[in-house]
Image (cartoon, rainbow, N blue to C red; front, side):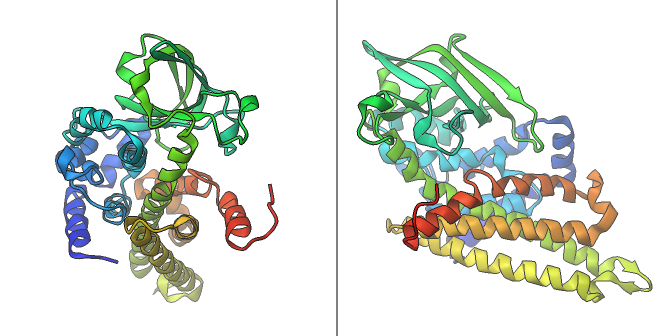
Length: 383
């Protein structure tokens, strides 16, 4: 729940976000532009270093505390996708990176000299079946040579560093499909033309790309942890990712509810405020109840994660419930605003597009249900 630290973070982020109103995000969306000024302000205030330990120049906060940052950006009308990867990719480096890697990169990330905003896992032929990825990292002396393709990789052009998952041992040579995958920290400033970045036009402003690796040579020091254990390292960070994305969805949901409630009180049709009609009032009330319920699961998952306790079911349920709540609130706001919801000037359609993503990414709600069915309820594997 909200502790003194979380209240302080919330108030600080809320004050910062007030300098970047809806018009700021609306104009960026129209131009498909990156929120450079906002990201710099958030970095200077220290919030993007929330999860970095104090000995490396960060705030040393927990995932629950950090989730408040993303929630507030969403609730203010902003798009936290511009910065969230720096938080949820951090776990792979923090938990499994070498002391040399952490000492070299974390202080500079905390100071804003470097950005770690890109996370390259997904491939066009594998999708959610991560163990079937085909991008390879072949050991050659004291280097690895990367070849392959990634898709839906955001903020590559806005990042200095990127975490990459690639296969280092052929699938035919491992006992389990999850073996033989390795994680690497790629310095995007030193790709020497061996990495082609092709922007993808998306329905929301996420700066998303296809990547093509053609004999990209990286030093063996770029390997995170042990070779062949990358899949476990990535999974390790996914509970944090689920919790942080859940917080974003909670923020989105509250944005829609704030807007819908205010509009329903002031918009008058047939001589009465539309919020007096149960057809408007009840969907808003139900969306509010579902949002508050999802938020409880978000805090439950965050508290377990920060205590070092197992939290797979809770983290997945938090993401599922929060994504569903934000989508429900988005549709409720669209109905409440009527025709005006479709105009850019009211910002509902922009946030509607942004929050729709979380029914699909970073994990589909259907895959969460499959996980709960098999691993929590003990039902037969469905896929």
